[in-house]
Length: 250
Length: 250
Figure 1 (cartoon, helix red, strand yellow):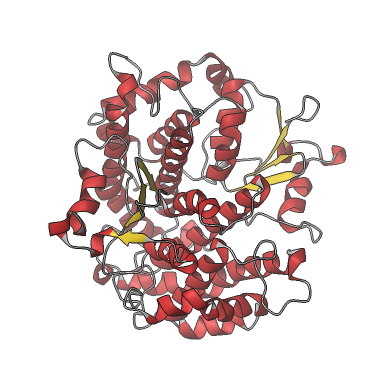
Figure 2 (cartoon, rainbow over the protein chains, first blue to last red):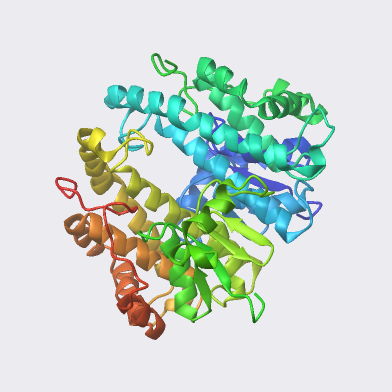
């Protein structure tokens, strides 16, 4: 990033969605960025700017979907790939290739959980309305709550337990001795699960105390706290990944 | 990779699954590797070796799932992350960061399609049997065939059409002038779709001639042809990502 050219994040302007994993990383370090689709179309921003990158006929390498990050001439799509690219540049991942690959693996697994959580309200197809798949959604949510969520959270717990740098600390990190983008993303994942499945998630977190401690600590980071209290943080709603629908929490 | 220590690929021994995207890359360049779980447990291979990496209590950084690649001390999980790591080392991706990120984005999108194709036979949950979700599976397959598959294939067609190095060529590549790991993976994706949804996929490919040409050309690569004809290539079956079940192809 040049000093005069902040990162451009392009994402749907009315939901947290997958863009939120990127927003949190940028906000946590206070790096300047433009949340383009929430800006003014008369200033070259807004949804038209986002749609140009996805559908503009002159775009050489159009991402399949957003979020996408623009850094000068480079356009990166896919949430985990954006964080793979951003992480070292904004100091939210270690310097070694091994640490960066491990962070990326964890991020891809967080993406897998988010996708499964999303698919509980769209089990038949993301191309159909929730209202057209409610009975299937309730079955899917039950299976996710009882058979999948705990398995994933237990894996994050193991990762936290086996990070040797967590010995003696109250607040653990997924990798090494400093919080990174994966910790912010795990916070966001747990936050989303608590929104969509409050009872089931609280129950699951009792078995994963390290995940619960990390989730409680992230919003105490000063810049994260300021962001979460600001208007830039969109509230969870029923157009995002994590949705609170009747009958989905058991 | 050291000369005396081939890559170790760990994956379920009876299916192509996600491991096949990695196998194809290794086979296409003729790099030595051990398909560990298909080896002899008495020689430290077989399923116990795979399970050690996933569940061994002494493993510092256990992947959530396989495939996983072992290269000396480094263990990499998540298919797309494995190819991100391997690609430059085995010459299947360009040298620039921009090309490597673009390849990774494409690979992550291929993974998204594979996941959606998988979920047509497991729409309620991967933790339940197909036999417990057959009506839902037929609805999901119809939506995938009619609303999703064509959209994805059209995106790959656009990527091929906009690669300036494809001008005047009969066989296009996704990136640059040489076939890379993403081309092998797109071949495998189309192969899987043709197995699971033969009629719908053939119909869709008529609208994406570049994707069809790439799919036809990859198995003519000499090493790929030898691999596909060998016993190392497991046949598609109903335990993998792509399954041929009655009523799923319209």
